Image (tube, rainbow, N blue to C red; front, side, top):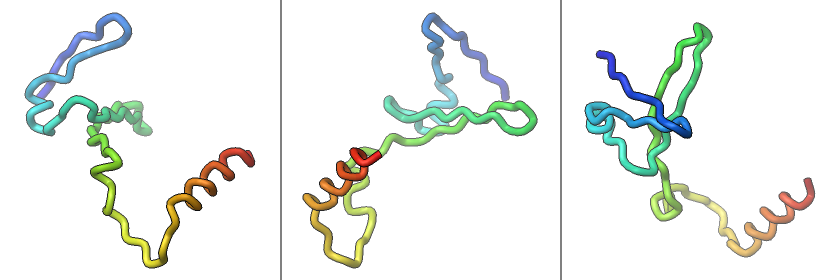
Length: 80
């Protein structure tokens, strides 16, 4: 099935309603464009994940200290 959309000023376009419904596309979701080796464009959708959604999704066996982790993060950024 082929869908057409128009590209407007500032390169904006609309995802057709049938596609939005089929893939449950919501505001703030990410559209990924990838060119394959044949020059064809592949489009995929990715849900934007908030910190609240990601919180608790990973398990760490050792105890962590949020303050020390943040210090290390800024120390690494500033050392570059």
